[in-house]
Image (cartoon, rainbow, N blue to C red; front, side, top):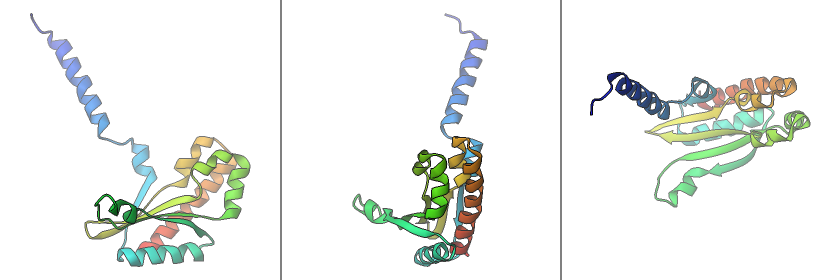
Length: 156
């Protein structure tokens, strides 16, 4: 049985595209996740983040020690997830659409990897744009700036 060279090349191209797609994030996903390396230790970065949140008119609404939870599996990791927000700002968002509760309060993740500490978050505007609401988008852009400022204060 003869193989069709055009068909073989087409299949090879198709499989290459599928394979490449499995291991890449869309450009928008890469641009919307922000990770900032800290010049401080993990503990100092956590403390500076908490301080920045309180001085920035926000509050830590919850703190999840993911490192502690994962230690139950044998993984040794310093990692804490913070839920940060401001009830007055949250009300502006919830007044428009209750679905925002999936994304606010905001999630800020502090973790250590390879001896370095990082602060990571998804831009609020990227999470909230799906609601197609001008008021939500306006608040989300303000939150982008706010959380960027928190990350900078915690890491420098």
